[in-house]
Each structure stands twice: as C-alpha cells, then as structure tokens.
Amino acid sequence: MRRMQKLLCDYRSDHDLTWREMALMVGQTSRYLHDVARGRRRCRPQSARRYAEALSCDPQQWITAALLDCIEDSIDE
View 1 (cartoon, one colour):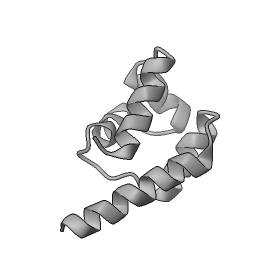
View 2: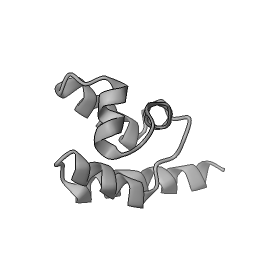
View 3: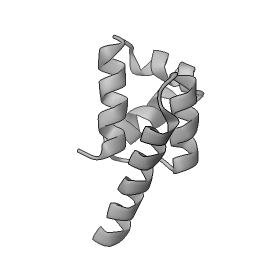
View 4: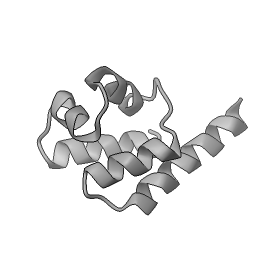
C-alpha cells in the first residue's frame, strides 16, 4: 500500500467518514479521492498539502508521503 493510500484510508476510518464526506472536506469528488486511496491515481504534493490542511493534519507528513510515492513511481517506470 502506498503512503497516501494509507493516510487517506486511516483518516477516513479513524473519523468514521464516507468517501463522499471526506471528499467534501478536501474539495474533491468522492470518485477522485477514492481512486487516489485505491492507488488508481497519484496524489500530487500540492494536493496532499491541501488535503492535510482541510483535515487539520500535519501537512509535512502528507506532502512527504506524496513525494515518496512519486519517487517510487518514477523508479518503477
């Protein structure tokens, strides 16, 4: 599981939210957010920062997770 997947899924589970509720909080569609959480889409560091701020989480942790996922993706290609 990628880092951003884990952060999104853990937050959603810990706060007992639906994908729709969480998507409204971060300003995305539920389909897009669910795709990121399932690894079907990448999360850019800018989006990770926005998600963290909207969810009152540590932006540095979320940005780092997105960056590391991007680096791993580029190595795997």
